[in-house]
Length: 168
View 1 (cartoon, rainbow, N blue to C red):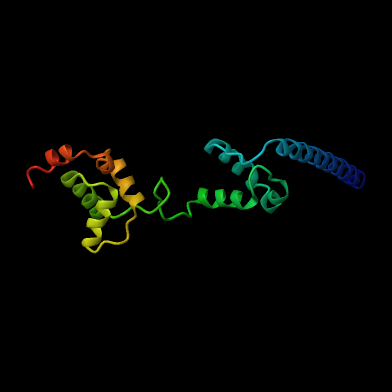
View 2 (view 1 turned 180 degrees about the vertical axis):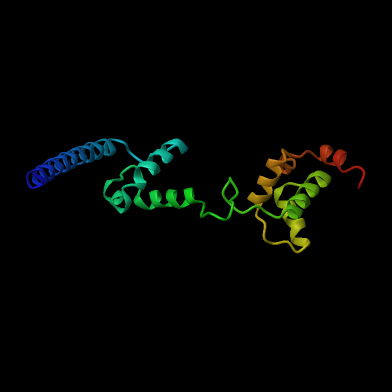
């Protein structure tokens, strides 16, 4: 009796495998057509990434043949990130944050002198601080909602004298 059922079960299982393979081939072709119609990158939400990770984990390395929404490298990075292998927390804006002391110094110079970005950098260089760019000074002041120094090219002589009367 077992000799009869074993080949029959094998036949049913292989038919199901062939059918599933046809489904996968169809979906791959359909996905390829749709992907060709969407130019550029597709940005996924956190929920969509979680769903793709959950479904893709069970597939293993075969995901490289299936995935089209992102590169396999991106998918494997998602897996690493999910496991928490990222030990270093990054600045959400992208780059490294400047030390708190330097930020406070830039803010203090801006508040007390009213200098613009370039002049603040000049003052920092006099103090021996060379590793700060104009854009960084701008970003620090913008985060603190401090407006840049006045536009010196349109400054009238009377305005200049009024502003600097005490020191003159």
